[in-house]
Image 1: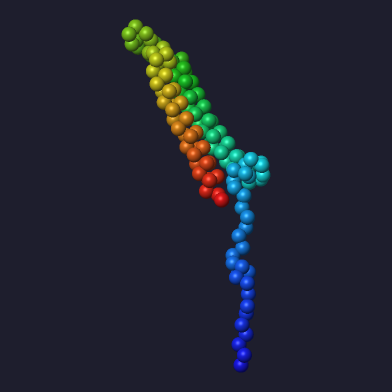
Image 2: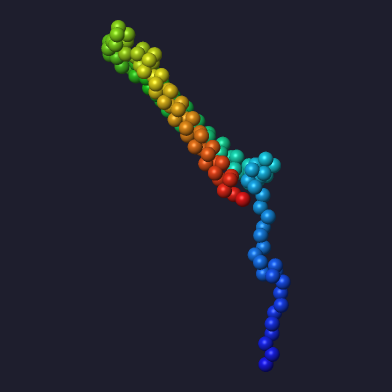
Length: 122
């Protein structure tokens, strides 16, 4: 019995590698995949912006409404100034600075996550 021997070139059995384009090139050329990457980043940044706007609106609007609908707060005085004015004129600034710092930190995290996703793709 003669056994058959198969003679092949080494490259024919090698796994075919599909040429991939870097994600940054996909973004630069505005391909479908690049647009998907950008939509993801924009969506996360928009979500953050809406959260911050809603928080600030509720905070400032709540302070104003509380002062308008609870008239007894006008009788409370701190250093001769009515409590609503102290809250809106002094105490609100550290809170707003904190919200701003949170916003910047979260926006940077969103961008870092985006960059990591883009770099991970070959």
